[in-house]
Length: 239
Image 1 (cartoon, one colour):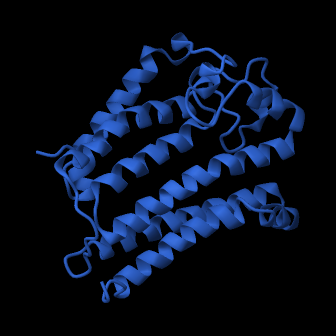
Image 2 (cartoon, helix red, strand yellow):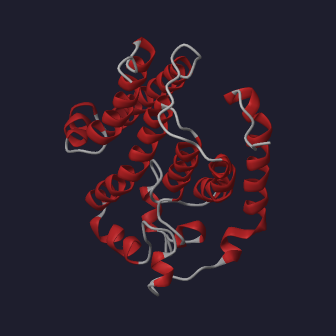
């Protein structure tokens, strides 16, 4: 491993660090409010969006370079069953993702206005108040398990870290923006899926999710499986 940090792996490391610092430090610490106070809320969101696009493109390019034949460094054994974890976990991830963007969601960007709704926790939000971040987290976990190389540790590890840290970060920001309404929303929802339901603070209502969203999620999963060889260079389903 003494040659693991060749130029490609160094770029991968820096790209992953940029991604984590962008979300944990710039967006998830008091620095966020300082910068937003200087350039305005819309200015901050615009800046953060631009930097996020730069970050994800940088990660993708760096990952491609670091997983080339010249820079590939395997660090752990991958068992055959592990290769199925991305495809399996992408099913609930797709349902969470579709649910998060197809109904009012107070934890989405500019979604805080939905805290004013009479019943802000509906559909997939009864399961978890952070369905989008959980979809990213499940995606990262599945691919982290299925890939045993160093570059994948940095890529999927950084995405998992940002998704997990983002949940508490969003909670703090929304509580600061609208303390009373956020307390009402948080009281009937949970970060961990199904915990509010198991605790008796909410109930599962399948009709609010509906078969249409499940069908869209399944179609999304099928599309990902079909396009995976073209986008990632490897099949999504092991042979």
